[in-house]
Image 1 (spheres, rainbow, N blue to C red):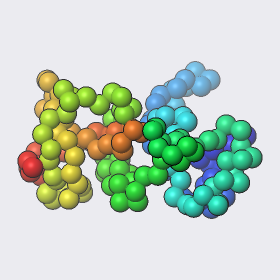
Image 2 (cartoon, rainbow, N blue to C red):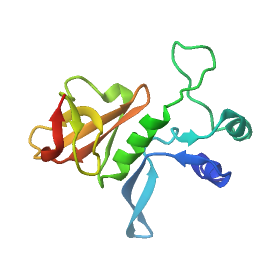
Image 3 (cartoon, helix red, strand yellow):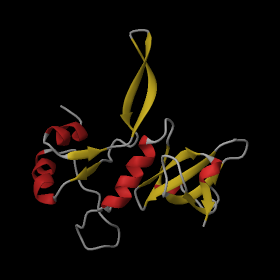
Image 4 (cartoon, rainbow, N blue to C red):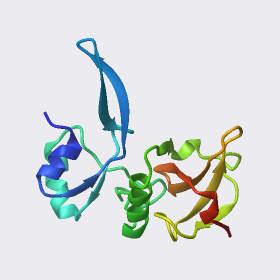
Length: 159
């Protein structure tokens, strides 16, 4: 059986799931394999009337629901937030993914905007890692996940 993100793609829906590359050993050879960062999280850009039939016939596929919201209200990420999130991931070779619970105030510093380069106009938190010569931009999808991507110091504007 195909993974849900492939089933939905084959059904003609726009699907995104953050992927990571890892090395696995198969038949004594090391091979790079792409797999979802979080196996039970994918984003579908379509309406519920198209998604619901696929969810109903796939026992392992379900919506994530808002906490404290109306009963049965799925989490919907605004298109612009999703576009920026996907754009940031695709703009770097080494994105680092975090669950929403992992992001703390100690890990992220000032609010910044990127001025120039591939991430021009992006806003988020500045992450500096002790001992690293690189700075990173942290973008968050509230209650779902976050990603940090390397940025060029020259493009950082403090807010």
